[in-house]
Amino acid sequence: MKDRYDVIIAGAGVAGLNCALHVPVDKSVLIICKGTPDKSDSYLAQGGICRLKDENDFESYYADTMRAGHGENNPAAVECMIRNSPAVIDGLIELGVDFARDKDGSLAYTREGGHSENRICYHEDCTGKEITAKLMQKVSALKNVEIAPETVMLDIICADNECFGIVALQKSTGGVKKIFSDYTVLATGGIGGVFEKSTNFRILTGDGVAICLKHGVAVDHVNYVQIHPTTLYSEKDGRSFLISESVRGEGALLLDKDFNRFTDELQPRDVVTAEILKQMKKDGTAYVWLDMRPVPEEELKTHFPAIVARCAEEGYDVFRECVPVVPAQHYFMGGIRSDLQGRTTMPRLYAVGETCCNGVHGANRLASNSLLESLLFAKRAAEDIKESYCNADRATALRAAERLDMNEYQNADAILQKYKNDIIRAIKEAENVKSRN
Image 1 (cartoon, rainbow, N blue to C red):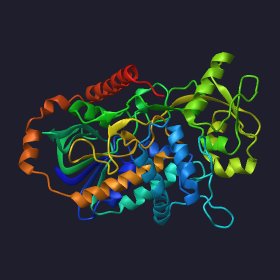
Image 2: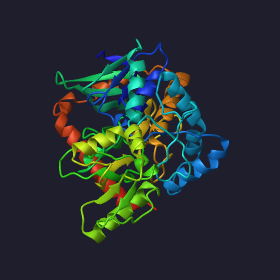
Image 3: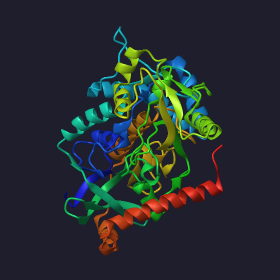
Image 4: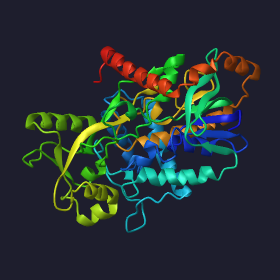
């Protein structure tokens, strides 16, 4: 890696990649990712990505998003996301994203919990992988973009509430270096790695949020953590395997220990989660049953092949029997405060994707709004950087870097553990101040 880039992006999920894709080609860009590029939650997204089907769907889509978020959403952010969703989908199609189609060639739509209409575009049950892979192909071909895997952001370089780059660790060499930039974009993903059970990759521990807490950059609603109702029950350690809400959208049912249906499966995620936990307590069980047999067999095979295969690996034949499911941490609605252009409260520092909080999700995210939100506001951040581009003052940046004691960064594991502890502490403190509606 060089010592300086015009733009540094921390994170290689859809937010980081789409931001890089829209940064002007005459600007040098460095993308770092903590692991390999496929270790982002974007890659894991199963269900799909929402799209406003037509003007008649706007009020319904808006109401569904606000209802899921308990009315704590930022109305301007919600409207911005919904209005721009057709353009986001069209842009993905231009990139080669292969969304499912009906027989007449039009986009196929599925439904998930909290939605009053079918408005979710999808690619089998691996929509995130399809989108991320196509974005990576495009970004990798850009001559102005360098991608550095296995590179960990340990801190930002800042002074007088202005950001001038990052301090990064290259795992391959163990070397820690200061990298300067005119603009830094945090797209560091979720915080699932701080929880015992999560659908997230374990390396996603909210480093960007913790670094902002350290430097007084505004962070909002760190206690707004979403639990997904249905992950495959397992006594094994590691990441929980999510069973997409779309399965229930296509007709799968939730059953108690006696195989009786006990709730409406298409309520918002937090409601369904609460019903499952209540039923588990009532039954004295560690899980409830998910019955996929009401979904036509051909639909299961074509729409949910990865889920069918994973269940089979665990010994469950979804065509003939129910599978055990249990809630697990899934998404982070809080995060680094950002506006509709991705700007944080620190000049030259942007935050996009799951690590930011622009208010679009409120207290609880509506299913399949995550990829849409990440893609849209990442692009808007890149466009804002382009429109307002101004070189950082080199002398000030050097002074900021000189103040850093590089010896403090030699034990990276200790730093990252401290960041995890800071996130956990912030969540507990926020819960004591204000709980969700």
